[in-house]
Amino acid sequence: MTKTGVRRRSLAACLAAVALAAGGCSAGDDRRDSRAPDKVTVLTAFGSFGREGYIYVAKERGYFAKHGIDATVEAGQGATQNLGLLTAGKAQFTVNDLSGVWILQGNGKFPNVRAVAAIQQNTLNSIMTLEASHITSARDLVGKTIGGTPGSTSELLWPAYAKLAGIDPGSVRWQHMPPQETPLVLAAGKVDGIGQFVVASGTVEKAAGGKKTRALAYSDVITDLYGNGIITTTKMIQENPDLVRRFRDAILEALVWSVEHPQEAGQILHQAVPATGAEAAAGELAKMRPYVYSSGRAGKIDKNRVARSVAILSGAGVINRQPSVYELVDFDFAEHAYGEAAR
Image (cartoon, rainbow, N blue to C red; front, side):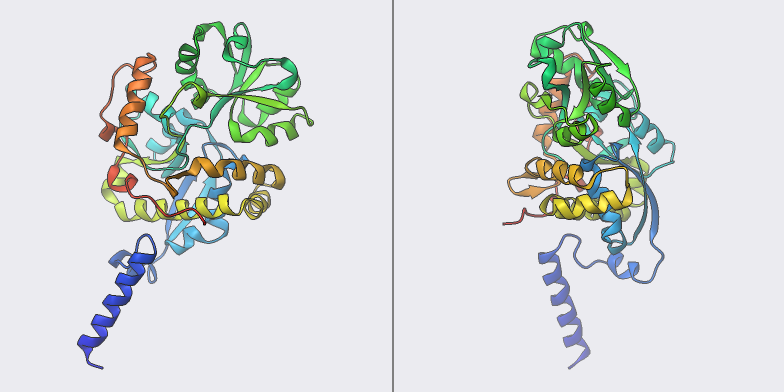
């Protein structure tokens, strides 16, 4: 076979690979076989709950390694603290609730961060209460106390949720505490509710000694808001877009695998963080599955939905100005979904 024939066959193989997998053949892929992996630190959104399991899966099942990344996973403490660490260069990526990040940016904070992919297509935020409390609506929270982590998205979004639910945001008191303490404090009756994701009911009930919970989902009254997303800095995007793309792909591949294999993913999280129960983690990931896909695909952020989200946040008075969608999201990364749900 001539050299030209070999080159043509190699090109055809590369084009076929592009059609089958995100990333395809590129100069960056060729170089990764011969260079040291890029070291990064990634922050979970909020502790090491089951819904964060896909990040540990990305590490333990080799998705990071496949994309030339050596990742250190650290438990995050909410949007405000995580973004502070990100912009200080103490982490390269974080996974946080996009609405919470956009509230901070709409109020002039953290202008140099961008979302590059969505993890959940709808917000998972809620106020979680015990069924025995008979709190069944936002109006029942008036005069009550909610536990949460300082700067968490559940607290940042609270004014918008409360106003749209028809109550005064100031009629409820927020009490701050570490994320891992919230289920225990709720179970002990020291607070009336906690800021928590709707998928975490099983985890909270286990920590609460089997007491049943009820979630007042923010998505019931606030439409168009995304859930978590992958966040990095504009500096990282400008200086190493290939790493950003590889990190995005590794996380989204692990995310899809995790929600399709929640039992196995729960075990992986438990092995990495023994304090996290495998069954509770699996339950969260299973419940998260429908939130991950939009029209059967994962990862995409839509410009029009971002614009509507900003309008909702502005209309509720939780941001001082309406930033451009391009100040919030880098669509060169975020408009390309990773892949399809399993059939």
